[in-house]
Length: 83
Image 1: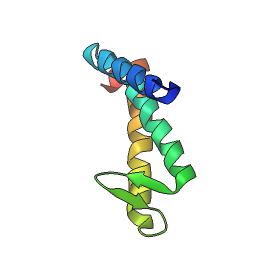
Image 2 (image 1 turned 30 degrees about the vertical axis):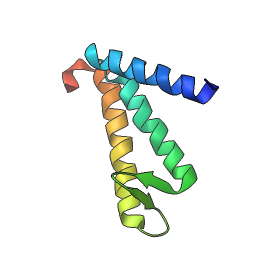
Image 3 (image 1 turned 90 degrees about the vertical axis):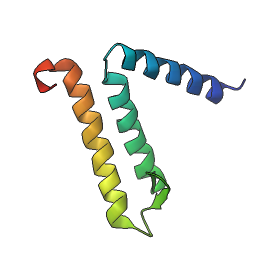
Image 4 (image 1 turned 30 degrees about the horizontal axis):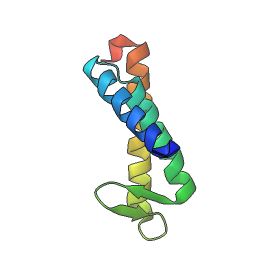
């Protein structure tokens, strides 16, 4: 098993455990990570791939959604009043 595959398995287990424990921090960090990757690649994924060059409006909507979801999920773990 190569390094990337092992990291994917570990991340999946960590996300499932954090979900079971009601901790959204890891999901929030994952959403923010996806946002950064999408900015760099100029592609986003919703149901299908969305290219920034071909559909910039939808691309930026997806980016905004991932960023907001990421920040909200991270903050809710530190600010329980937001839940």
